[in-house]
Image (tube, rainbow, N blue to C red; front, side, top):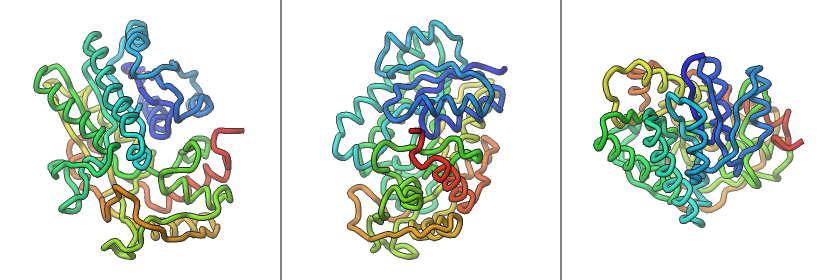
Length: 342
């Protein structure tokens, strides 16, 4: 095994897929998760897929005492930090909850890392830090601003990481700005399993397809886009997972300080909501009833990445198509109509 990595939020959607990719790349993993939006069953399935029992610790990133116990017990090479609340609409309704968890929790984690001199950090950021972009595709030098508290919490953490890198050359901080992760593991064993009604588009579509929800609400059909619906850069979650392995490999290879390094993970192509619905219908053979409703607060018209930096620095690029994303999502949803609940 290579180095040992702490994966906070490792039981979640992106975390589980990344744990598989890390194991396949030879990394030793410890998952730390409070299970607030994930389940033990997800970890069990990852263990089955990689045929290794996973070291899992239930805990909250805001609990410094618990974190110290974890760092005391393990010699970590670095941390991949997924543990965060992530629903845009919920963040508008409950901003304090988002700042408490996403910002205060991250500060707490960084303080404990500093105590134990673990200073390699891969942060799960988001394209929402770019706000409503002036120019497309969006590169890493694009202006940052936010249209909702979720995005603001990610941007605040990015500012903290920038300040940290200036204050201490020993920190190596990669912030990965994801565009729109979708899809599932090709086995159909793990995928996105939101609590209650999904906030993200793809699980909503798949739950309509499987008959769990009656119809899809499409927020706005009057945007200045190809068909009036919002355009996003959808990226397969296994491509995204590979991006985290590439980031860690990059940190391993560096002999000098990296400082604060922001990198987009996206495909570089935008697809509209209706284009995704059409692709899913074709792959699944299921009808997806939908209706247009008002635009959602904090949403923007179009957002897609320039992923050139990821390719040049990390040697990474997205490989899977919209059809692959829909096919893998449908396999997961049809095999697990109630997600991880039996």
